[in-house]
Amino acid sequence: MRKISLIGTGYVGLVTGACLAEIGHQVRCLDIDEQKIYNLSKGTIPFYEPGLEDLVKENLENERLLFTTNPSFAFHEADVIYIAVGTPANEDGSSNLEYIFQAANNIATYATGNVIVVTKSTVPVGTNERIREIITMSGLKAEVVSNPEFLREGQAINDTFRGDRIVIGSDNQRAAAIVEEINKPFHVKVIHTDLRSAEMIKYASNAFLATKISFINEISTICEKLGANIEDVAYGMGLDSRIGTQFLKAGIGYGGSCFPKDTKSLVQIAGNVKHKFDLLEAVINVNNKQQVKLVEQALGRFENLQGLNVALLGLSFKPNTDDVRESASIVLANRLIGEGANVAAYDPVAIEKAKSVLPREVHFTKEIAEVLHLADMAIIVTDWDEIKRLPLSIYENMMRTPVIYDGRNCYSIEAVKQHRIEYHSIGRRTVMNLPKKAMVH
Ligand code: UDX
Image (cartoon, rainbow, N blue to C red; front, side, top):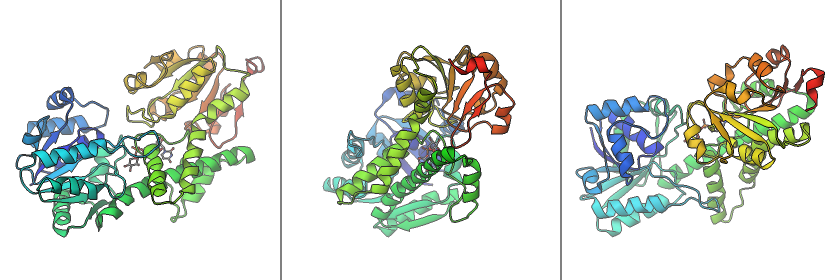
């Protein structure tokens, strides 16, 4: 058992803190947000993540986890300090390291002994060396370890306990061995690298996964034009074990707090060493186009969208999370409102978060029936179970013109053909099955 202190109770910090407590460590989580720390001390989580609230409550009760705004108290007796603060994007796409350096300064000021600093935050290559410099300048002896997270929102606890690998990057063997020992109870394969390689593994992994998604989205557009079916194509490709089936699901483009930010940041990182990362720039451009593709198609289908009732189904960037960061729903809602449409949006959990980033003209509801009632068109943004399970007869019966743009291929073409609907999806044939009089709006 180790006494661990952890800076930052955002998504990564909270999941990491709760999971480290769960495997037996004594964890003190530090944050500057007093209200958040108060709520967390009562077991209230500021975002939706399956299983996390129970884990936090359980470890609060057994006193392995506690929350504080006091750095002296947080660092007291801790020989290992994790940094898990945010690294939001600057205007130019580079990472804003303000919170990282604040954390390093905090350690320099309040830590009392020599420390091992473990960086969970995604930081540009070379940042951990700067963290070490800041702390050692204060007279403390510090070793740094880069230990990037690979957590998927909605599955973060499972990913912590059953991840594919734990990357431990350090130039100091003792520090690396201690971090390996901390993680031992997870029983996940560990690899050791130098600091810079560990930092790079995180960016390269996310950039590669984003590349897979943009690649399959490009193939899906070509499939649409050639009359091929993207699902069969992706399956046939993925069976080649060198390619793999995962992250080959064509859709409305990737969103979230990681891929959009990390891809842009890696382009910047490469640019800083005078390398133009052409491939990754193309991946980003393809994704930007993919997010608005369905509205572009709708503009071709209807003469204009002025006064049309549009149902937006799903707001979060993927199911099982209330996170709307970089979700296609944001660009879609803005574009639709800009085109003069009336937009009603459904989501089972993300409405509160969405209200602060979507245009205020959008009408929000947790009732699918309410958004579909007399709608002229529906756009499926997120493949929530609630949406995938929705019988097609509901669209058929409730919408004024049942024209569906499915950004997640939630329905099989065979099922769609049984209904009087017009159905556009990603990388598959369009089904035009509307009664004649409903065809023209
Ligand atoms: C991602 C990485 O998976 C994780 O390892 C990293 O540490 C953080 O970023 P997350 O952002 O939670 O996790 O979501 P993920 O499940 O990877 O999906 C990202 C986006 O890609 C979503 O918008 C999703 O809908 C989209 N996606 C994913 C596709 O469009 N097709 C796919 O095949 C897979």
